[in-house]
Image (tube, rainbow, N blue to C red):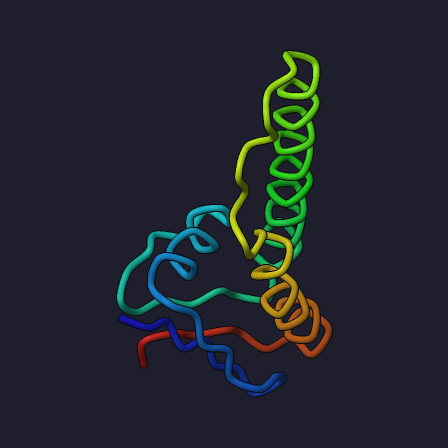
Length: 107
């Protein structure tokens, strides 16, 4: 399954189901087949997503530091980070918030 996020203020954004579900859960939305993000919900969604990116990066850094301290090989991290997956969505949220347009998916 794919999530296709649409808005009048930004181009369509397509995400694979696991990535789209994760982003929606981070911003406090149910990962339903259809949904909407209203402009008034976007500031908190941006804050939540940026916080999750920062937390993931801090956690990864701590894991690498801990492995180094124990003399172990650093853990394998995902090839594509949350930051890389979130940047297009954050851009869409910012554009839509500025334009006062909602983001919809599954419609």
